[in-house]
Amino acid sequence: MLIAPSILNADNLNLETDIKDAIAAGISRFHIDIMDGHFVPNLSFGPQLVEDFKREFPMTDAEIHLMSDNPDDLVPAFVNAGADLVELHYEAMSEKKLDYWLDYLISNDVKTSLAINPDTPSDVVSKFASKLDQVLVMTVHPGFGGQKFITDSAEKIKQVREIVGTDTAIEVDGGVNDQTIKIAKDAGADIFVVGSYLYKDGDIANQVRKLEKVIE
Ligand code: DX5
Ligand code: ZN
Picture: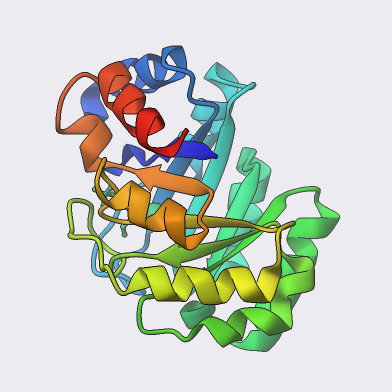
């Protein structure tokens, strides 16, 4: 079980403090949302942030949630910046491209994840399962933090667990708080991306503890 903070809704002008506070609370992986203003209607961070992050926090994992339909430029850019894990969206490219970029990640020793949107059926995961360290089941429509967890996602998580077995992690992203984390965990998820609940609703260490209490 792992809580991966999404820094999208952290304080951008005090990002270092927001990251350090989470690390002090025991966090070992951050979820970095990359939005391209095209695949999703919002813009966020670029490779420079990941490079800076890995220079300052080399022992902490950078998980890149790539919400972009331009993998050809961006996957190498984030790998070169020091990404530990890259999540590619099924909806963002052809299956052929997906296969190619998953192989690229594997050959560069970067962990792989396939992200699926709320409207994408779970069975698309089967074809790629052997190449995946993780599946990201989106529990909101990607693009913005602070949205409401889609409760139907529980069924999707169960279906993905059936497909990938126990060796592949299942992550959920969107609307995770101290209530919805239990729904996701009970359905079979083991990694929880948390944005607003950690960075908008109070003291970070306290929020981490409240979540851990539910999933431990
Ligand atoms: C949404 C992003 C999420 C988001 C999570 O497109 O992928 O990672 O920042 O934020 P909350 O926890 O506020 O839904
Ligand atoms: Zn995300």
